[in-house]
Image (cartoon, rainbow over all chains, first blue to last red; front, side, top):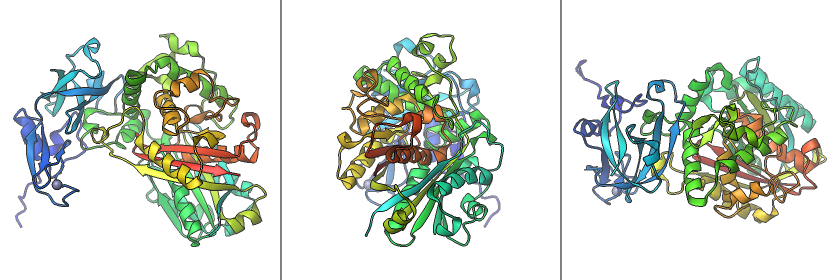
Length: 144
Length: 388
Ligand SMILES: [Zn+2]
């Protein structure tokens, strides 16, 4: 075995602080780099997964393909944080939210540029890739 | 097979910073429960130790405690389900006793949260959620529960004022509880004063006053088979029903945001096992880590229909004199929430109520009590029904 085998730790780029480096869903980061938010779909049973997963518990197999999160979903709920965990202080305040796309839901942040008054449960939102000031990548929700 | 009883209950004071080590903290709850059970360590056949391990430097505390508490060479077990660890520990003790494997089991819950800063502790609690897909967005426990609060308000017209009423009730009883970390009065007016600390936003729509405080503490419940329970204890309290459930850790994997499915499912199981319904409960302890959590518990346990929880608190029906007294020991909001010890403290309160030994907070002649204990943001749910 070569000592130069590199560890695939792409996932450490996800979010302000990533708590995971190694996952079989590391291609998620490549999609983010391309401006795409992607989930996985089981090629055997057709189930869509977001967040993406490498394995299908229905089929007990791992035949996944990637799909892009496109179109709009509806805002299910949200909260604006005035305090954050260690490592997130510079982001404050920010709003975390859940958006329902029908086949799946997406958990993330509402874009900082969206004023509080414009945020209403049930509103149509789209999911877009966002590059953070610390060069990390995440995605945010914007009014559709 | 016979019944399974609770024959001893104890807890330490819940405090901001316990001046001792975790084994010394565990001793406090254990000592009180053993004295309550009139037992010596030779009478205990096994121990179950419950906590969330990320707060401890000590690996595998169960082995350390078993020696410190004089419970060698008996076997010891470690149980973790975040904030519901000691209710899950009670479930394990029940099955160990019911199976006939052990006659008497001590369930020891503890948490010493003060060794890390409040923000670090929040970060650890955030990591009780999905660290791969949610924590990178900067999530925290109050914000998750705030998302439920926001959805509940939007769906049912529940208001921040309703949530304030829950905190006011909690403080009413917290002032009577010598073991509670927060014993100061809290008034409704504090929440409408923007300069008051209680009204300061934490994660909208939740404010400081909507959140329980971290605390250090320990609790202990002594569980026994029917024969030993009757031999040792003049007033055993019987475990009539147990329910436990889990769900998706990631909110994206859930469908309900106005209540906790794990509480609904655990309640369904516990009521079925006990052969009773919500109307039979005389006194309850629910997991009010946040005010909204208590309001949702009213609905998820069937004390109120979905959306009607606010009516219960507005009409004071969950006060001591009401139709269904809830958290008349001050709840987590007043007592504080030492993760692994919390469920044991809730069980202790209900046992004392059923024995008629609850003092200033005694509800009138209760026969059946319920404990609702939630782990994480509705990730784990435990409901326990106890009777005289
Ligand atoms: Zn499949």
